[in-house]
Length: 259
Image 1: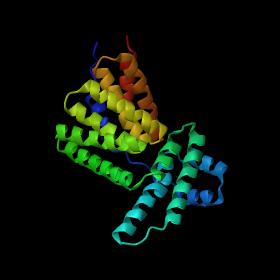
Image 2: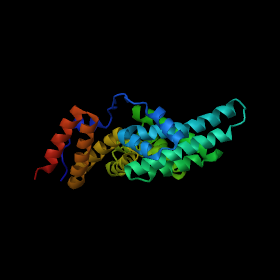
Image 3: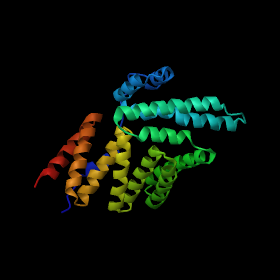
Image 4: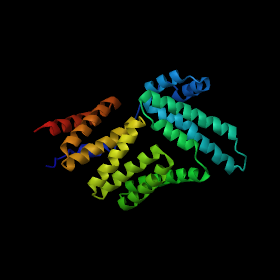
């Protein structure tokens, strides 16, 4: 039996979340710890700031790519030693992150990025561009175009080991499928994105994707999965301080728990 889902639950997926500024300079502190080779302290830093972990590591991954691109634009030689050091720092941080969270995704992402050749670097940027186009199409309610561009993003990111980009593509694919009335396909995309974001400790993104999973499962009559997803979304809402979202999700969990 399909359940009626409160309209606000659907709206939750589209609401951008605002986070409080980090009291600690995570990027700066990570730089100090990496230079010292202090794995234990880096593990503790990540445990303290899980949401900031990937961004701090990515400073040395996308940062290295930006350095390479700038050198090419200025027709200057790339400082290969600098790039190697940036990649080594990223992998160091990623290994510590996996130790902190009991995952393997951070080191896989960082090491894959560090091994990009020139063609793969360009494919990475094309994937980012495709995601940007997908977002524009979603905003304009051009769902066919959004699905095309989001799929392009996913298909470019996934072979690269770009887990972050893969999740971004999947999330946009899910939103586009929802707009096209393809609920089952949307559920599949959002569920995969939620799992990747969870592993990457991108809590805000996981929250939005999990809300989408709960909503779609309820609409499709998949009550057990809807209840599990709604309960997880409620935990995340409380963790993120989304009081309004928590109220709606509490009502949904109660409704799903009713016989």
